Every structure is written in C-alpha cells, then in structure tokens.
Image (cartoon, rainbow over all chains, first blue to last red; front, side):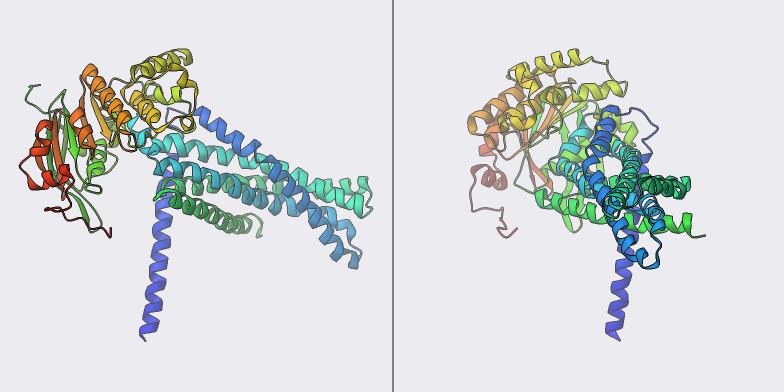
Length: 261
Length: 264
C-alpha cells in the first residue's frame, strides 16, 4: 500500500514540477513579449541575431535538407518500385519536405546550433554579473537580451525552412534523375502538380513557432542559469533538450490542427 | 533637504534564502558625500546587501531610503530615476564581452539617452567621451578599441570604474574592488576610487574583506556579521575597535568569537 502511495506522491510531485516550470516559462515569455511594442528598440541586436540564425545556419540546414530529400526519394523508390508506383515519388518528396522534414529538421539543427549558443551566451552573462550590470546601466535585461532574440528566432526560421524546402526537393530531384534515371521534365512536372500552397504555408507557420520556442528555451535556461561554468553547461544542455522536445510536441499538435481532416 | 538626512538610510533589512538567513535586520545610515565600507567574511551577506539596495534582490523586510524615499515600495518603473543616479563597479568588472571597451564605458550614457534621460551621443562623441573617461582612470584611450577579453584583471577593473562613473552618479557602489589584484594594483584602484568619489562628490558604499582597501576608501567602516552590522567606526580604529569579533577579523586570528565552519 505504501509503495502505491509513494508512487502516486512521486507522480504528483512530477506533475506539479512540470506545471510550475510551464508557468515560469509562460511568465518569462509574456514579460519578454510585452517589450516588443515598447521602445527603446535594440535594432542592432535584432539584426545581429537575425544574421546569426538566418545566414550562418544556412550551410547546416541546406546540407541536412539536401540529403534528407535524397534519402526520402531513395527510400520511397525502394518501396514504390514493387508496386510500379515510381511516379508518386516526386509527390511524396515534396509533401514530406514541405510539411514535415523542412520545418522539423531545420528546427532541430537551429536548436542545436543557435539555441545552445543563446543559452551559453546569456548564461555566461548571468554568472559573470553582466545581466546585473545591465540593470544598473538603465537597461532592462529582458528587453535588451531576450526580446530581440525571440523576434529574430520567429522571423529567421521561416526563411531557413523556405530554403530547406527548395533544397530538399532538389535533393530528391538529384537522386531520382542522376541515380534512378527519372526524366527531369517529368519529375519537375510531377513536383509542380503536387505542390500545395497550404503545405508550404503550414510549414512556414510551424517554422515561426519552432523558431520562437527555440529562442525562448535558449533565453530562459541561459537567463536562469546558476553556479558558474557547470551551471552554464547544464543550462545549455537543458535548452537544447527542451527545445527539441517542445519542437516535436508542437509539430504533432500543429499537424493535428492543420491536417487531421 | 536637511544636511542631517542620510543619503542612504537602511532600517531592519532582512533577507533569507530558504532556511539560510543572510541579512537579519541591518540598520545603516550613509551621509551624502561620504564613503562607507562594509567589511565581513565570505558569505556574510555583503553582496546581498548591495544587491538589495540596487533592487537586484527583493528584501524580505525592512526599508531602504534614498534621499528619504523608500525605494523598496516603488514599482520597477518608479525606481528607474533612482537607479539612474547609481553607478556600480562589480567584483569581476562585469564588462560586456560582445562590446568593445569604449562601448562598455559609454553603455550607460547611450542607454540613458535611449530612455530620454540624457543627450543623444553620436558614435564619434561617444568614443571621445570614452577616451576622456579612460584617461580619468589612468588608461591609454587607445585601449577603447580593444575587447574586454584582451585586458588584464586590473585593466578590466579600471574600465569598470570608468563605466560606473560615466554618468556622474550621485551614488557609487563598489563590490570587492581589489579582489584578485596584486597589492600595488589594489592600491592603484583604491586611489582611483577615492579620487573619483571626491571629484564627483558622490556617496559611496564599498564592500570588501581587504583591510588596507577599507582604510584607503572609507570615511566610515562597518562590520557585517551574522546578518547584522555589529560595529561601525572610523577606518583608523579598524585594528583597535574594542569589539572582539571585529578585532579577530581584522587581525586574521584563528581563535576568537568567529567560528569558521571549514566544511562549508
């Protein structure tokens, strides 16, 4: 009996911890977002973060998308060839890339690259008193450090996903034409026929939400890091793990909302 | 305002972190234009006291008056004008890694201008102002182009001091200004602090466990022990205070009323 009670108590504590954490993150996000429309605005930081996410993440996102598109084409061919349905491969590639692979893979890459960097930078500022120094220099740390990063994450990821969509399709095209001897014109025609504005739009909406979540996790964990280098390391790990889990959870929820009918 | 009104007046200040009571009813008056040095062992709450005054930590009880206004009762926005009158030198300098030295020095001026509390500076004007401030703390203005990571600990402290005094604050706080510096550089920093405070006519609170520094900076010294300010006096009486706790601390004796828990 005691074992059952202990289990229930442990479960209750875990649920309370999750709810408490969710509340803290929501308040943190609300505080940061309340500064979006209130001056002063830190354009230089916003621009720098946009370039950091949108430009410097391009190589890693581009390579991931290119090879993922190729893999989808190759795997689809292996299955579909048995049923002489190779003509469907172009449609499968563009559907998979625009709806799922583009946003999710770009999001995971950015979470690993940018989310970790944000958390480490802000965490280091926390443990070296730089955030307190901002407060003593007439500067709101949330407005200066967090708000521009949330805005930049939300704006930059859709751009990266658009690039990932194009390169993912290009990866599928390259494999089908160069390796599987598809006709280039037939593949392009099939791709255009399968291209749906709704799929691309939903992918970009997902990307904006993922970008916000990645930046939020990076900033939240960095801002609340404690205890020197070890604390910053733990915050960085937590930021990437939390962003990845949230990203996949929201991917399911958004897919359910947009495509369940 | 009467001359007898302290610039900073603290009454019954309390702060605990969980079961650990750090401040247990601190009372302190600092008169305008004077320097008060708080001494005390590591972990006795000196930094917490400063952070409470700065509004970086919310106290559990008590009042902190600046020019007769209890700032603990003000909202964050109402506190802004009071905080704009304070400059702070952090223990490790707390310079912003992502900015150059001159941008660090003029950061507060630029921020105040953004908030409408001061004149806007062009980039050239800001660089010129930074050069003046760097000279004021005994540095070559060419250092302004470097990044903080390229500076030694002593230079970082001096840049931090230049940043703290840039807006000509009425109140200056110094958190362990000589920690990590060799004795000569410590004396240099103390001399600069004393000069800056005198020239600006600021009211200063410094916290330290460096007795030489306390004597060089302070007009008054107080010792924080077990969450309270247990003694106040002149720096000249620091080594002969008549208080056994203070005497043990200032002479660095192992035996005495202060029991050091070496496990924590």
